[in-house]
Length: 236
Ligand SMILES: Nc1ncnc2c1ncn2[C@@H]1O[C@H](COP(=O)(O)OP(=O)(O)OP(=O)(O)O)[C@@H](O)[C@H]1O
Image 1 (tube, rainbow, N blue to C red):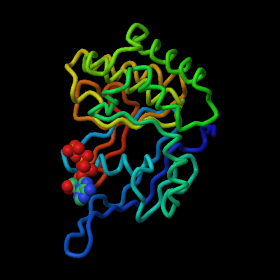
Image 2 (tube, protein in one colour):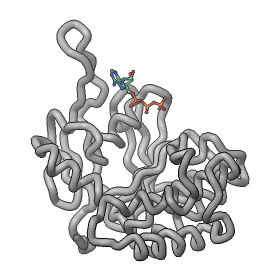
Image 3 (tube, rainbow, N blue to C red):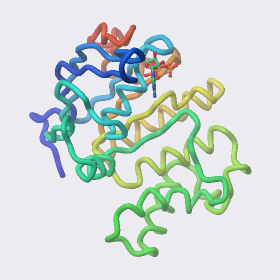
């Protein structure tokens, strides 16, 4: 589904989230409000345990929305069925801190897995698409390498290729540079930024890494489950 610039890719209103039951019940997110437009790169920062990952997993349809409104591409996730959530998941790409590659699969096969949720593609077509995006991330000569034989930055580039091979509308990245040295971290975000701009993809990136804040159009700050600020980055 395509979005025009007047429809926010993401619109969150009065979102609360709780973990646990009864005595153990604990509120993790409080009245979150956030809109992200097509093509924006938004960075979310904030201390450990403040609720960033919880919010990211709700947006990506990996957790059920309990209260408030969360619309992704105009579709309401609060009250969505598990079938609808599966559809949502297919429209987002994910990159995690621990790249989550399958150790027993080559780089090419890991990326191809990102397409296997779309039954319309033949194996040959999937291989072509996976090869192309791996070339784009500079790993054209590493197609048949296993993750153990790649550096941290290369593994993260495979993860980027896997997340973007579907041309998702939204890329959700949770501390994608955490395991990388500063040069590799920088390369990885620059690459995400370039590919997302080429594909018209929106990015929401959680990071503790101050060195990459300048890639954002906007930064937001989470503290104690409250989204504190929602402003233009001073660099732009
Ligand atoms: N599955 C869960 N069950 C119970 N509590 C949880 C669960 N997941 C997260 N929490 C709690 O919710 C709060 C927010 O956690 P979350 O992982 O979203 O924070 P974060 O900002 O992503 O932290 P970090 O930067 O360390 O990854 C924390 O208090 C955490 O203990």
